[in-house]
Image (cartoon, rainbow, N blue to C red; front, side):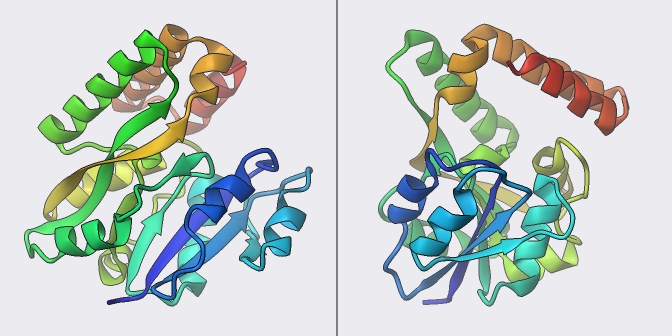
Length: 228
């Protein structure tokens, strides 16, 4: 089995990072690289205590962190995992079987949100419908691809926001995006902090703004102003 590098960008994730990493440890077929983007809490210390590689990105921002992690990764396959997401148990086999298809250039998982709220069940269904119908997964769905594909694409576009969206758009021009019918489970915290429907509206406004060619920096500022 090819070595898979799991790259996890973090900023101030002391509350959840150990649980996320514990769910994927102890496997000789993977390496985990945590890339810190300027944490001021105990994230760096907690990851180090687990014996997992954590590095400081020279440039902050999720796209920069993931690209920096990829530069030092040793794997033939890359999986980019958000700090608040947990992979399905058999994720390695699922990724390998998906990428065996020469027509599939990259992939991601279906999404599950760790909450019993009815509104979030609806969000899950909409996300998974969008992913399958338009081959358009987002970063919280665990985007993966072969190393050579990532390097040929030039990595994640170094944007302050929408880096995952733009990379997938570029990948779709090169091949098929496979959506694995197994769920990656992400925290409900962003929906619970801001509100389910407010979060959804904010996300859609950012996508619309991106298509209207509004500056990604302005979109990032809008997101930051409305996420609390």
